[in-house]
Each structure stands twice: as structure tokens, then as C-alpha cells.
Image 1 (tube, rainbow, N blue to C red):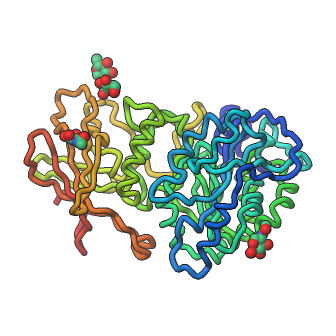
Image 2 (cartoon, rainbow, N blue to C red):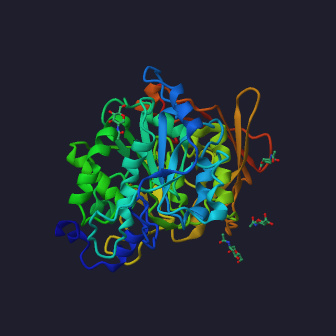
Length: 478
Ligand SMILES: *[C@@H]1O[C@H](CO)[C@@H](O)[C@H](O)[C@H]1NC(C)=O
Ligand SMILES: *[C@@H]1O[C@H](CO)[C@@H](O)[C@H](O)[C@H]1NC(C)=O
Ligand SMILES: *[C@@H]1O[C@H](CO)[C@@H](O)[C@H](O)[C@H]1NC(C)=O
Ligand SMILES: *[C@@H]1O[C@H](CO)[C@@H](O)[C@H](O)[C@H]1NC(C)=O
């Protein structure tokens, strides 16, 4: 039973990471587990149940009606955290999302009923878990309650029309259209456990590279979820020594003989500070989630955390699938490298960078904990920021975007303040693109798009057009 502790011997700092980061999450809970006998669905679910009947097993494509969400929260955290869920729950084009927010106790009475207008999922009170053992030192036994969200979600919202159960934290934001697209490439009748690891090497190493980190969110196909729901309690009995809820779910799925299907669009974000580097070099798969939004800087400068996220969702509304997708082109005349992370930011590198260098993640952020031996090790390719700020790229943040009647989407990115008189750069980068509609083939085998620097009609503005690459086109300066 000690084996789980071995890799983290003697690392107090890492313990802090455990407490605040991994499991579906990290809510510091005063565990006053009231003995609430049975899971209670607080809000009338009959309309949701009707929507369950709308979809059937035989529909070919997966839609949002095939998904059910289980969100982990607490009675004390929910009123503070629900702003995050509100960003993505039942937002256009969807208004029939289904799921529950699981709390230990209901929030204060004056707020208890305000989940009724569809802008938030209904609250469900978790079952009592006091009969289960929890022996991890310094951990929170709420990990058991949160692990059982998986089981209780299936029990409350089990129907043949459900294809996927999706789990996350109250500070996880999802991009539901991309989730639907991504899950549609898998057959929900087979056993799938879909998620992603942590960004930080020691986190992944301790908890397992094969574990879907709960804060980043994960999805379980309904066929697997039904079996898992049956056996989960016996696993929870046998893994009292584990830290988090996601570790318990992972152990049980592992015992069922199933491995993780890695989808790098889920983001645990075990980082602090400026997440720019991570967001600007997103993998080629669609953005699915972001987590720990309280712990990183607002993703757009000079905005509050929520305002900045709302700004990102404006781009998601226009072209969800292209969000953060990185396209690179070259201004041969000036020998510049231009990178567009669509819907978020553009960058001008005042030199020639080959594509493999541009798609590395710039270390603009910090590790979750300082001072651990592996504090500088991440689970993806990184590169250091240049020590001289004037040798770093000039950054342009999304200002606004619109879709014209011709279907062309124009997004404008404005230069952020950079105190380098030596770096000439336009004030605005204007990007034209069409809406990205990934078919099953592109979802299975994605290819980056190409772009061109167009002659600009407006001074101080650079114009970029994104398009599919030609058959044998290479993304390079020559
Ligand atoms: C959920 O539904 C499936 C199929 O209808 C059934 O086989 C399974 O036992 C149910 N699971 C739970 C936990 O209710
Ligand atoms: C920040 O925002 C405020 C209010 O919107 C604005 O007045 C100010 O000029 C902005 N500062 C920068 C550096 O963009
Ligand atoms: C969008 O941004 C561009 C460039 O930053 C600006 O010129 C334009 O006026 C803005 N459009 C709207 C509708 O705000
Ligand atoms: C630019 O310089 C001003 C004044 O020296 C300083 O207040 C500001 O923080 C600097 N901005 C950046 C982005 O370095």
C-alpha cells in the first residue's frame, strides 16, 4: 500500500500540489459530511427526462443530447464557482444539456433554487460515504464522494440514449461543441476512457501517465460507465490509500482492463501565472476544456478572469473547432514568422523560425509548485523565453471577430504593449478564415492549415488568410 507514496517521498511541496490540484479536484472541504441518506435530485428533472427520449441508439451522429455531465462541487464552493459552469452550460447552439452538479450539502437557502432557469445544471446531493475507508495522510476524504459522482451520475441519468458520461470540476470549463465532435469519432458501444494527463511531469509521474486527470475532465462511454458503476464501490473499498478521486476511478477502470484514450484537448492546467505559451501552441485536436482558472492569470491582459473567458467564448461561438488552432506563415520580404492561434492571439517573431520550433510551448507559466526537483519538467515540448524581452515575439490579442454574409470570418488581433522601440510591428493583425468543419476523416487524421500574408490595404495592419494546405505544400520560409 505504500507504493503510491514512494515517488513523492519527502516532498512537502508536492503534497500541496496534491491538495490543490489533482483530483477531480481539489476543493478544500471541511468534511462535515451530513448523513444524507440517498442521492437527491433537487430540481425537477422531468423536462430533462423528456429530452432523454428524443435521441435513440440508432441515430448515426453523436449530438449534445447523447452526453450527460457530472460536475463535482461542494455546498460551500458552488456559489463562488458557478460562474465558470455558467460560461459553457446550455450556451448556443445548445439548450438541452443534461447532467448534475454534485454537492455534499445544499448551498445556503437563498441561493439553493437558482439553478432552475436552465443556465446551470441542477444540484444533486451526493450519497453519504462515511462507510468507506480513506487512509491517505493529508488528503481529503471528499475524494471518495467525488469518485462516486461517476456512479451516481449513471444511476440518476441512466438511459439507452446516453452515449457518453463526461466528468469535471466546478472550475473546469468545457467547449461542448468540440466535445461532441471529438467523442463522435469513438464508438460509445465499446469501452472508452477518454482524457488527458497533467502538464507537469511529476504530477503525471506520481498519479500515472495513464490516468485521466479529473480537473481537465474526462469522458467514459456509456457501455463502460454502466459496468464501472456496478463495481466502483468495491474498488473504493480496496484503494483507501489513494489520494484523489480520479486515482480511484482510474484504478477501477484499470482493473476492468481498460486503458486511457488520450485526447490532448483536455487541459488540467497544473500551472500558475501566464498560460499564454500553453494556449498559443495548442495541439492539432480541438480544445475541449480548461481548468484551474482561479490559479492562472486572466488569459487576456487587462481583463478580469471571467471577462477574459467570455472573450474566448465569443470566438468559440463563431468557430468552436478552430479555437486556438495554430497556423504559421512567413513574411519572406521581412523575414518574419507569423503564428496565429485562432480566436486568441497572434505572434510576430522577428526572425525565421522553422515550424517545429514555432509549435513548441513557450514557458510563460510556472509549475504548480516551486522547489520540487522536477519543477521545470513538463509533459510536452517546451522552449525558454528569451531573456531579453525585446527578442521575444510581439504578441497580438484577439480584439473582435465577425462572420460575414459570405461566410468569411474576420478576426482582429491588436498588439499588446511591448517596450521595445527596436521591434517594428503592425498595430493590428487581421485574419480571414472559413469556419472549420471537421469531418470524421479530419478528426481521425488532422492536418494543420496553411496561411498567406496578403498585401495590406491599411497601414499598420497585417492581413493573413488561412486556408487548407495544398497536397504537397510545406509550411516553411522557402
Ligand atoms: C444503466 O442502463 C443499462 C442499460 O439500460 C443497464 O444495463 C445498467 O444496469 C444500468 N446501470 C445502472 C447503474 O443503473
Ligand atoms: C485597460 O482597460 C481599461 C478599461 O477598459 C482602459 O481604460 C485601459 O486603457 C486599459 N489599459 C491597457 C494597457 O490596455
Ligand atoms: C474590430 O477591431 C478592429 C481592429 O482592431 C477595429 O478597427 C474595428 O473597428 C473593430 N470592429 C468593431 C465592430 O469593434
Ligand atoms: C513598459 O514600461 C512601463 C514604464 O517603464 C512599465 O510600467 C510597463 O510595465 C512596461 N510594460 C511591459 C509590458 O513591460
